[in-house]
Structures are given as structure tokens and as C-alpha cells.
Length: 154
Image (cartoon, rainbow, N blue to C red; front, side):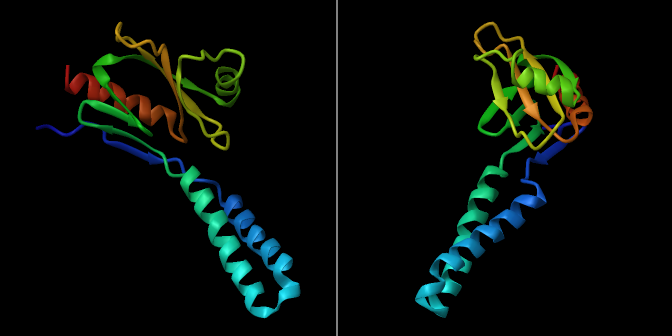
């Protein structure tokens, strides 16, 4: 078994500002519970912060990987042989493909806080999905990894 020529792995983590917002949610819970005493106040601070942090963390948990002969994006696993050309999208073009150019049949791994993206055509005639839209911080590197995996396993 031969590993991918250009291994790629990325986690689409939430931005740092979301962690500050998680703490502020905890502060708001603490203020709500302030009339009930110090112990409920501390419980609200810890519980509210923890609950908001879990939500932020779970939203920022999907990964994009090129492993062997497959592209794994979130819950989707697609063989690179079923993929066509990869188009690197800048912020403006990515916004267009998220809105008015979008196809409802497309697979979207979308994170609005990541401005860049990669659009990859699906060439498998059995698959109704026309393309994959993948939010990524390094679209050029992901496109190179897909191409390298395609050449390695052709």
C-alpha cells in the first residue's frame, strides 16, 4: 500500500472570536443567576461557557483529508478517480458559488468564516452530485493533493 504523494489534512476550526463569544455566553448565564447567590452564579458561568464552547467546537470539527485514493470531506468519502478538475475559488468567487451560482444537488462543506474554497467536479455518471464545494484555508494545497492522489492511484 502506497501513501498519498501529497498528504493533506485540515480541520475547519471555528475562529478565535467564537471562543470569546462562548465565554460571554457564560458571563450572561452568570448574570442571570446572580440573584440566586454565588454558587449558582459560578455554575452559570462554568455551565454556560462549557455549553457554548461545545457548540462552537462541534461546528468547527469537520476535517478535509486526502487519504490514499480518497477525498474525505466531513461525512463524505469520494474516490479521487470519481473527481474531475479542481477550481480554486477566491473570496468573491466562493461567495458566488455559495449563493446564486450554487446547485442544490452539490455537496457543500461550507464554513462562512473561511473565505477561500475549492470547487471540484464529480465525474462519476452514477453520482447525481455535480460538484463538491469545500471551504478551505489552503485551496491550492488541497487541489495539489487531489491531483497527486489521482496520479498516484491512476
